Image 1 (cartoon, rainbow, N blue to C red):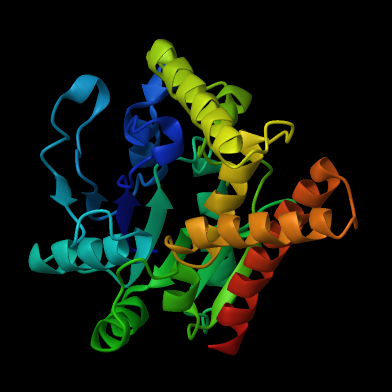
Image 2: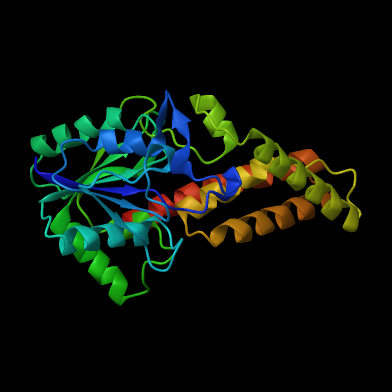
Length: 301
């Protein structure tokens, strides 16, 4: 199939201490380089992000386009729109568009199954990767270009794409859910993710400093609220915030953690459960509801 590719290489990488995900290294290659390889065969490729550079910081190959979402850090839906505009302005037309987030080092394993599924069902408007545990990943997907441009136009005329969910952008498309090989959609949101995937980084001291700062800030807050005896799993709180940001919209992250914390406090206050049990239950429920919300939004639209 003839296709173009949009590689998303932006984002603040807050839980990585601001370290750009495209520059992280796996098996001797940056994640951006691996994403470019996963898009091999594309008629044209655009990298959308604040610093679209290759390994070591050198410029991308001349044939690779560069773009930036507006406003900056407006989220993946806005980045997809920016990539489509850049491709269209360059005159690079193709019936299909491959969307890839650059933080999935094994995404290349999932590309072929997408094309195979579309070839088997030509009436579909796209195909979205589904991980082995059933999670949908729209940022490893192949979509009909005209249909994708249509939905971007509709969203732009409405509430806009800033901080909007990609699931919402794609909700009206007739999409195939395609099971992909294990690990294809594993991404890097935290340093724990990076370590689990065997991804190298050279800023260990900075990362430790950030973790130490968060722990110190947590202790300071607990002391200010006279909650010194309460144990807070900082990594779990950040993980739930990440789920909310990805599944709903980015500003949902602090709102979700606030409400979860409030609920945990209420449960503890009435003696319903211990501090640890209340917090764990609240965070788990918040994670579950955020995932279900994104799925229900996609189904409803």
